Length: 529
Image (cartoon, rainbow, N blue to C red; front, side, top):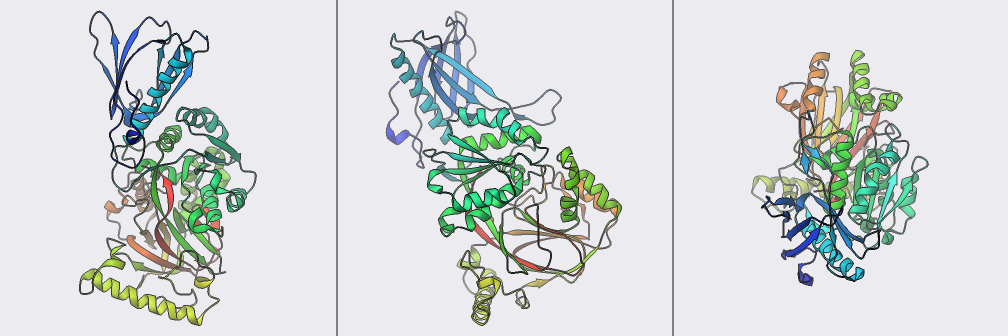
């Protein structure tokens, strides 16, 4: 039971975890003895009795944290607690969900209470360190942890969804963060753009991460607040985390999807995302730079919508009190008076590997893209020289080298969609459009792509309804509907003709009119698996 060597403690390297063995008793009577064995990936618990009993193997991938403390009765014993959230089936449940499983053991090997506490703390540290290494994922994840030396700011919008965000925090999140030893400060937002103003002026050196317990709109405020800062390049790399507390919860559903576990909803989704935060792994996150016709520039992490989906999102606000069901009701209302929107859509098609646009060799198929990219860059540079006051040159945040000013034609390398009658246009940057809308199955947090869907006029109401039902399982593109088109893009431009209308960015209504956007790969950071 030696103290783990420093090289074995939590870090980025492949060092093995601590291996430990010890004897503990039960917390109720202290009469039952348990043997605990800790390895790199498992905590094995076996009850010591006259007749052998099978050991229980607790997977450290399911461990959120471990703590040690002295007994309240002051009898000199210490307690070791480990908190697991394994997947289990509920009674009559169709898919497994994470369930809390607390394991507590008593240690009273020494007459000195502090000696017992030190030993229990040593076990708690080793369990925490080994479980942090035991992620079960190797792709698209930066194996660095949220430092936890400063603490986490948790931003809560008490009005989001059905107004239950604070109840969700008190019921689940506060306890989970305590179990994982995540020190945090709760900030309750009081008005629209409160979070944006707060983050824009905050001393970010005081925080290891910014966690949002709300809908996607509050994270939209936080991201744009970070990009408003003079030190935006450093600020935008502050890890952000999402906990579902709104109606749509699209990013939270996406984060859960990236864990490669079955789809969950409601409080089960909250527990899953809380567990991801406790693990503290950080992935890169794409940002999409958006230019509106007025010159306003926004940054998005989730989606841009025009037409049917945007209308449902905004018009269903009146049904907010029924939670996620508001979108179903809003869909039925909008189906009853299906609209067709006129406009112009154009985009720059993406190749399979966004990085190849910059690293491929001339002569290859990707080299042709590279040459076109260089031509576009030169054209864009010339345009900027002639339009010093254009929206593409108004600031130096994430230079949009693929875009020309909105009052100029798109470059010849772009594709212009022939159809001009649309039911909807949706640009997706994550996998989910809502808890139960698996809109872009191939999307990842940092794939560098805009997943562009558009639906042309002429589609029937029953067909549209079938597509939305298929979207719940991500099979809508398998329906073979000729009106639904999917393209991967690096940039796109939307020029609505129909007025009035609604455009949303990350679920928030923005100025209506022409806009264009470009993807920037992996510039932000998100706590994800």
